[in-house]
Length: 123
Image (tube, rainbow, N blue to C red):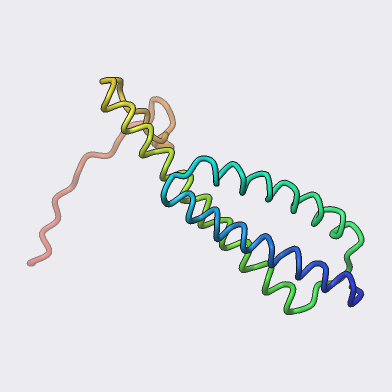
């Protein structure tokens, strides 16, 4: 990757990192307006990164490290969104008396459950 493209990539990744940090704080306090603003900024940055990625070659170690930090921040924010959604659903269920929808258990329908087994570890 050329020096000019590399510096532009680092600039875009730094901006995305700042957006993700701001988004994390907005998610923490459930500030819907800021969350929407950060979403719009991420979409714009994604478009710019997409154009740059098409012309990119091999990333430098510094750019890869920066990209890894951005990925970790995005994953952390995703976890916050999932948790917030779960909390809101639980609040709505409690307020309305509706049953709380839980995550699927992953078991196949009709699968049998093993009975509990008591184990004596004292000998």
